Image (cartoon, rainbow, N blue to C red; front, side, top):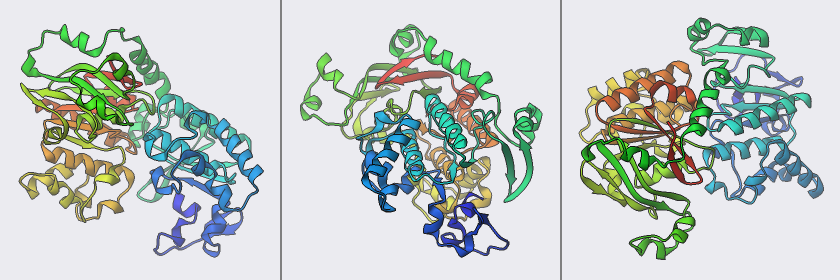
Length: 458
């Protein structure tokens, strides 16, 4: 539906289109796509796909520059959207250094700078922390007060219940129900489950509890708390002297022991951390706090990370970690390589087994797509393909970076059940997430990353 409104169908995505789609009184079939771009602004589910610059400032002003606005007007619009979206701290940054949530914010700003009449947001909250979601909600309320029409495709509903005027429920390409704001906010739990929708009262049911977990943990470090449990060493996963910096300093990586001054310049600083094997660990923290960096280092994907991981009495470091870890990235487009969903899963298997691969796909509701090209799937379906590949890899440690972004309630619940099943088989699982529903469903422990430091908080 969103592609019909912004004109990507039929001008980019080809197919047979019958009927009429009118935007501001204009038939989209009769308009050039560049004309519609001035009326309809779109923030895609994957914000990287709409970036044209290498830095945040250039990206925010890219649209106004390309329509030939005078420099004073461009700077005025930049100042306006930066203020509206609370983005001052992201100015002057490389886009390549941003977290997924920070990229989402810049994409919103670049679209808002064009001052379109209609703004389309595709899963805008999928990678945002709570503060950023509230900033987004405030921005949408502001845009609404300015007379703009906002269309949101979304699975997370809690932050929308007080600001939407109308909710439309789609199933298999058809509109099957509509609600007013009042009707939507009064949907019962039974009704929500029948539509496979997430709760609309999440703020009351989860966020208060989630915030308390995040802030009420004692000040002891995660390793101190685990050391007191008396768990046998063979049943622990131990991280020792784990350090990483985005601006490598060669002298750091030849030292046997870093000084406190050395540690301070590192972006990730975990002197010691112990996790019980076979547990599901939720990794939480604000956008840009270091959650994805922690997972990449743990998986052996960051060359300049130093430190060791001890599992069952064996010590691993650097690239050796890739032998025991498998990571599902935040942007799964980076790890889809083959021409079909089935072959994608088979690729992860040390000894390809088609029947086993099909069973994994069936458990994730992907069996009907097994012959489809992975890149032809929706964002949520791609996410499930990557999860299927992780299961097929049979690694000891599985790392998931925002695994439920783009997933509806049913598929989010199925992912949680799969993670619990894998943990029961002895896998140790780390889940970086902003999703309190997922944490409530499956996580045994919670680690909060703050400015590169890890603390066990639940």
